[in-house]
Length: 414
Image (cartoon, rainbow, N blue to C red; front, side, top):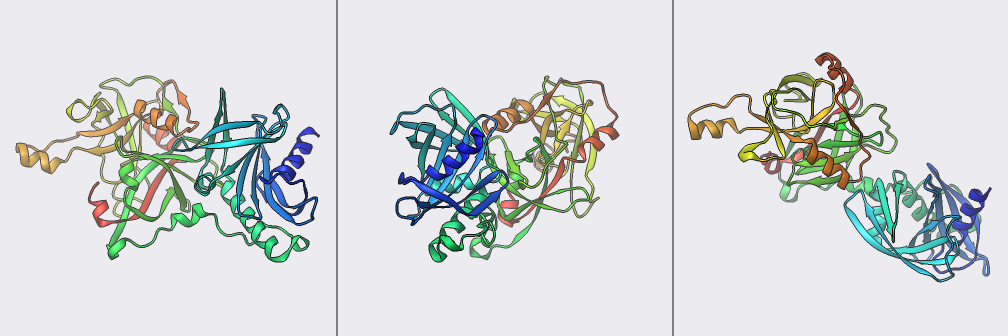
């Protein structure tokens, strides 16, 4: 009962102007978020729209949008004991990248409420994870449903201001698509530059649909980035973060997609001479529509010019393998395939054609990237060896073709 009572109290009190409110009128129901429109108890006039959802960490998030066009974010909990008017700074980080500082005020003992600037609202709407820090308290919040919630609340305010509280209904119906979705549909390239299809490989590393690939696979993409599991319909992927220096990128599948299977990262260093398996989609459209499997060994524990971020491998790879998983013989990920030595340039310089010299990003670099992006990946110790056919079969539910249209200039950078 305390949870239901606190949720009701939270959505009633979230308005940043501090007015006592009555409601809800109409409804906002998205995932675990509930809410609607509220009126000023003293005047009966429309006050704000708000939605709230509880988390396992004991905190309830409340998002509000008032009649004056101000967004707010509140943190509520029955364990909070704030003094009326007490202030607190809350640092928030979205998807391990975008960060902001919110200044919150306690309008009641069990809730802190902060104004959200427009740029923070846009990031909040697009993000999949928020880490909030205040003092020594650090809390994680899954934001996978915030896009449609923000859209529904904006729709709520627009409709109530136009039609009044008496005509309040289901505000999730007729809501504009979230800005996150709209932003995926980029305009045509400036100057009318021609585009061409661009393909690579990625692999899922969390049940929430986080997908690792190379930065150069998505660099220069125009419009939607799509992901395809073999034999399944394509899905539009959202860019969460990228690291051009280490050639890594993190994408995410739609919130409606769940993955029962995902890659585990080897928790022990691999050695020179160990066998490896590369899986990816080389020359997609020319070769098989299914992924291909190649085998080899770890030739060296460093890349070009002793670059310790990379493994040198002998497993054959081609354009389209980029971003794909590199496995050990137990089926654990030991690297991210990133490229091959430029054979024609080496041949022109030395007179010899290099063979079986390819590279993968080490798991240490990958794990640092995922940690910075606040992704809940899993690691595993090497166990008994598997047949290559079994490793490929296990990888099928989470190894994905990544495709987009890119400017020819960007594609030439690969």
